[in-house]
Image 1 (cartoon, rainbow, N blue to C red):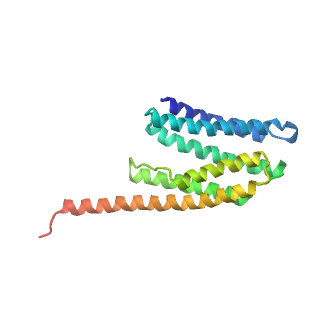
Image 2 (cartoon, rainbow, N blue to C red; image 1 turned 90 degrees about the horizontal axis):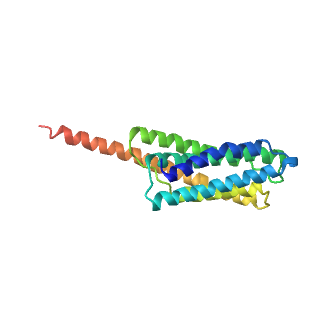
Image 3 (cartoon, rainbow, N blue to C red; image 1 turned 90 degrees about the vertical axis):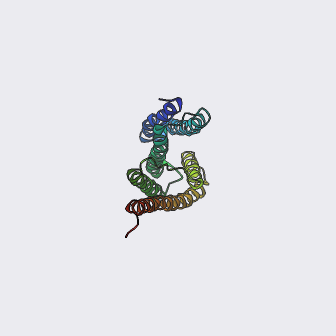
Length: 198
């Protein structure tokens, strides 16, 4: 296991601690919100660090290619789910349910689509796009803003939702093109193997 993989694993392990801080949060235990925020920020930093190490130290692995995006999605999905519940109960800024549904739906579609692509085309690489990176950035800033109960949080979650929808459509389009290109390649191979018809 490379050092980059270990950092990714640390990010996955930190998720239950983040969830626990939000589950047990009450106004009397206000410090738990800041613990959760600290864990979330640490996870974000670790994401940047393991990506940098993997690129510069040539520590890119198949395990990392799978675990890293899964860790990001697990962190963000759980963050949105539990931030929604805690904001509805205690915060002055309440995350709307529709934002939560947009985030979960997009990631569910991407995970299912990725599974289909990897099943029919082993070795295919699903690379992050700029739309996806912008989505991740604004989703993360949305969680931070809500935990801090910042008044401009609605602006951030509207931007995050817009990028979430756009990136979801973009990933779906690229996934369909990938599958279609595989079918096209198979058809060409069949024609080539059959030879000329006399």
